[in-house]
Image (cartoon, rainbow, N blue to C red; front, side, top):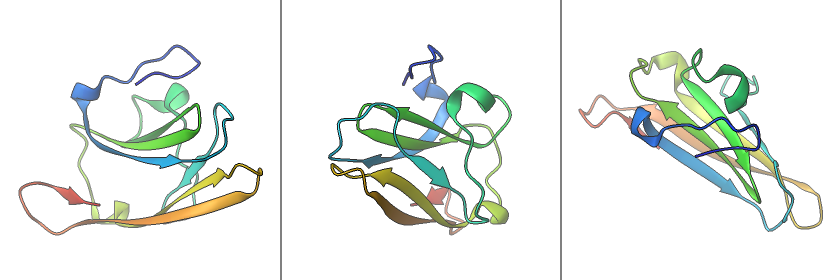
Length: 108
């Protein structure tokens, strides 16, 4: 993964990602909100300090769970992707992230 800041995220150091796509052709669109209502930091600013980070690309944005960081109960809940459609109207996609205790880890 890479973004327009030139910073790369090595996929070997991630547990998984969820992408939110738009019919809009705008670059660098979308944002992610965690269950507490806080915006999840963009990849370029906080990659080494947070468990989750986001990156934006042409027509989509992604949220990534970093490898080696403990997933906790505070991280469980409904996450939201806010991204514009082809008309520039913001659309919201919600998904739940919960750890059911299986050895495979978090479930989306």
